[in-house]
Length: 207
Image 1 (spheres, rainbow, N blue to C red):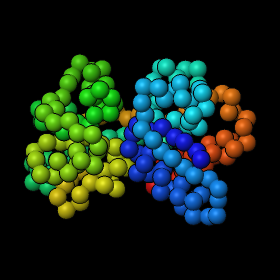
Image 2 (image 1 turned 90 degrees about the horizontal axis):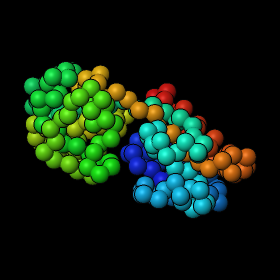
Image 3 (image 1 turned 45 degrees about the vertical axis):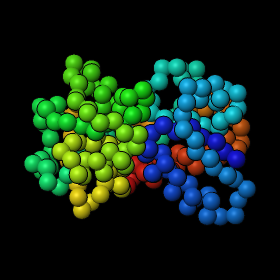
Image 4 (image 1 turned 180 degrees about the vertical axis):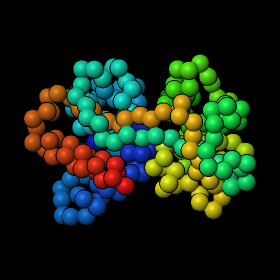
């Protein structure tokens, strides 16, 4: 069994189907288990209770661990079909709007809010939900904006009732990485595992 921790939805929505097709569709003794991140994920990695952690590359506590970029993610804005916005939204419009945020860490949707804070700005979020898919469905029936990873929006945004807009450049992007303990660096099974994740990332990047 190969255990992973994953905080961000692109993992489940993008990597899991690829892993199923490339590995689990063939006779194999390998099992995958994706579990949510928690405060002790890196300790679990160090003690061998996890094989990999899949996360955004923002945590400075991982400096002593090995990591590799899988793919990069940027953000788009999902709004109702009835929204006055058409193809894109400016930073001024974005800050003036109401938002449905996704609680990634302690009530903060990490990357959009961090990037806004870096330029001294903050958006207004009267609603916080636990999943990006829920945020997009809220946006479909309200005047709120859901800020979600582009690839997730293309896969999951309710197409008949929402529009996908280009967001302000200030929202930025982030790198999605796999993280492991150095003692697994030359382990044959772990090398195979990383190669599978790496190939999945390449497939996602070319879509």
